[in-house]
Amino acid sequence: MKPMKALFAALPILGAGIFFACSTHVAGGSSEETNTIAGTLTLPSGEAAARVAVQAQAVSGSDSTVYNDTTNSQGEFSISPKAKGVYGLSAISEDFAYYDTISVYGKTVSRDAELTKTETLSGNVYLRTNEAAVGAVVSLAGSPWKAITDEEGSFTLVNVPQGQHSIQVLSPQSNYVLNQTYSVASVPAHWILPLSTDYAMAGYWTFESFNGNTAADVRGVSGNAVLYGEASLEAGRDAGKALHFKSASDFAVVENDKGVLDSAKAFTVEAWVNIQNLQSDSAFVKNIVGKLGFSDSAVFSLSVLKDTCGIEGSAFGFFIAQGSGDSLRCESAAISRAAVEIGSWTYLAASWSGDSAKLYVNGKFEATVATDFEVLVGENGIPLYFGKENLNLLIDEVRLSTTAIEEIDALYRYQE
Image (cartoon, rainbow, N blue to C red; front, side, top):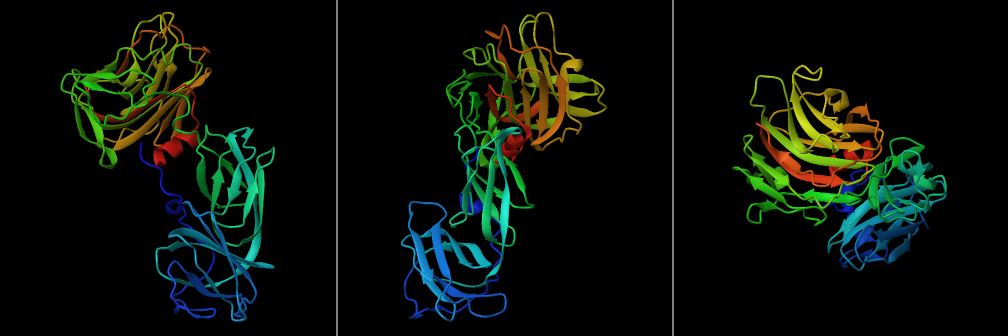
């Protein structure tokens, strides 16, 4: 999994102030202090913003102090945080306000800015499409603009400076991404918090290293994948490693998954894949990740297909069957509308929720198919295969979970 970006890296949209370099002259004279934020505030009329409260607060890190100053008659201010880092800088004066994020690294940072008129930002935060996020903290990072969502997930931030802002949302539940940022594009805003990638984890194979001929489930929930043929680790995504299969004799199999999907009422399978070539001119369905076993057991396959199931050309598909003599058929498959991009990394996510199966490609919903069973049965002992087809492909970050993710989750994981 790629590391979460620091919060300040996720704040590309700054406040509405107009900035330009100025001298280090501040209220009371020239500043020799380090970690100082200093400058002059003006009103839209061009007048000095005198006797305006100014505040600086760390966006992240251990410095919890709120630093305050008040502009003098010329609108000058000076604030000296005790630690280096990224700070939110804000000012409020009746119907005008200012907000920006400032990086402080041992030198005086000079900012001259113009206050803008204020507005009210409001909206709702949800955990799932129809489930309100009660108690979520909504704020402009490092500022006094903060609200807690009510029983309907509603929030209101008043007297915020006009302009686009990145709003920080702290989840009230650990099952969801705890710290998420959203750009305010319209009001009222409606946001759904994505599920944590660790929620309901049932297996995670990153393929960053081998132990002999096995690739471990790095969470230790499911079993290790045993490698066969000439399956090898090669350069993958983001300077990491990926597992490379070149033919049907190259594959990996989890013989004992410790029953992670036994009697599951929902699950999701995810993988990053890079199809090098399809190696066939005839129609086919070929497994990428799947439980391939007996007809009396529930089975599934996240696959690549060509010239079959009503598709001309190539596509990705998610096939699922409940067992009891049922098998993987085109009628029980959610199949993508977009062609497979050869030689490109693609994020695939397929979910089953008890009444339908859904397929997401690169974070976007692609297809769904109805299913008529509510629980997976007879899963015990059915192996999980990676590959085992005549394909040349790279595969990375295979993940199983016992929940059905939604499009917002797939998009988050694709962009993560």
